Image 1 (spheres, rainbow, N blue to C red):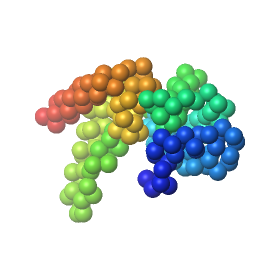
Image 2 (cartoon, one colour; image 1 turned 180 degrees about the horizontal axis):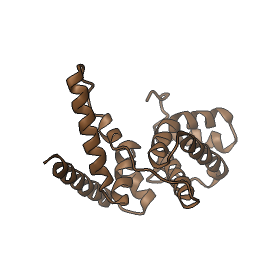
Image 3 (tube, rainbow, N blue to C red; image 1 turned 30 degrees about the vertical axis):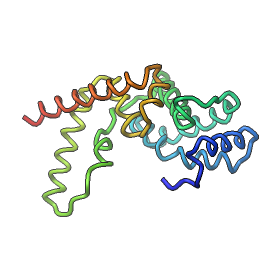
Length: 191
């Protein structure tokens, strides 16, 4: 993801937060650029339109700017804190009548899936994505959200735990169980 040296180190993040607290526009731009791709990917999978996803990320950053004075480093870190805000924004949109859509689980496999040349591989990949999407849709909303936060958003177990009020070990166990359920659903559909 090409960050400047030291940005991911606690001191680097702390300095960036301190600059943001002082209203430094460059610090906010760095925060936005670092967080935007993963935040918008998360929102795209939860909201109906691209426009709603982008609005949710904008609202997330506005709220972050308003609340940066209350931010305290913790297990979730700055990225986890921003995802906590985004999660609340998405849930509020849902409650206010904006419809959520099922996550596209193809994104869960996209990171590890190599690109295959040739039309036969494209057909097989498309069929696998359809089956994966159907299997994912059969998971509980809690399993879907957990897998989205861990795999799509790339948050670690400690960050997800801080967002959901669970211990990191419980998050890892829940992820393992959710993946096992996804595997079972996928096998059931493939049979």
